[in-house]
Image 1 (cartoon, rainbow, N blue to C red):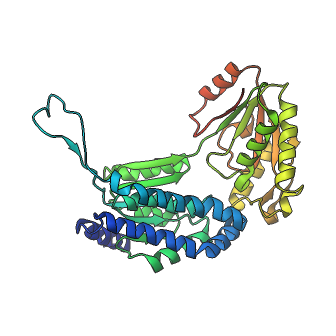
Image 2: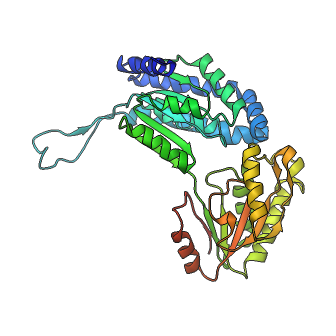
Image 3: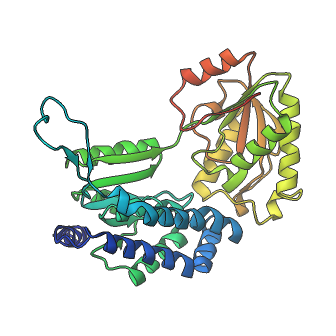
Length: 370
């Protein structure tokens, strides 16, 4: 028996005991989670800054506050959601009183990404615990300070029979996935998602994947260009472009393009007071490997730099950058996941829609129009 097997089996025995079933127990765990997060805001903020150079206000806003909101929402609704409810009779059940009874699954594995390391560890954990499951969190090794804080907080506030943290990299995750879980949740890149599904299939374990993609933005000529520029700039350069829902590229006409670029430049200057490099609200590329990946694309691109382009490897800094590119450019092949925003010129909305449909399905799409 491996150490991982012992942890999983310990949680499974606790789950089978029925102790996670009472609503009161679930609410108690959620209240503990909320208290834990509130008590450790400073530690969380410091860890987020060390890993990705995100400011303390942003760390609270994007890592902690929405988890607390989710906890409160669950606590307010858990009793009602957990009740059995009748369903319409069918030919097969016309002599019965059919009901849907909602039962927890068992031991849940949550594999988290590095870009929002606290948020994406606890946000999926909230419904897992609210539903009466036990859980194991595998935090990303790419955000090591946050992984340490997660492990420390959980060990202090939770019984490992209910919630445990397993740290490590690819080897540890590979071994962990050999265990039988009752549900697996993963947020990250599609290639890793495929590996997780393949491992889960050996146990017929259901999987929930939240994967990235190239999220397009269409800006039409009748849109409010100032608003479009400001919102695109916020969505793109928040967290240095390392957000799965961030605008990945823009589709717009030659007429709109210069006005839109001017609006985005204005927004960036406003957000970062003229110098993103010295502003606390501008994050950094997560590590050397991702910096080199983005730098290689910047070296390969045949596009024209319309804004930014400055790089500093010693600081993992890439300036907010806008490129004018063709649809075949190096930046148009895969999700960028960084602070570079290509613009592809199109002639019509129909052409923009055809371009989007020709690629893989995006995680999100945005359109600015009146």
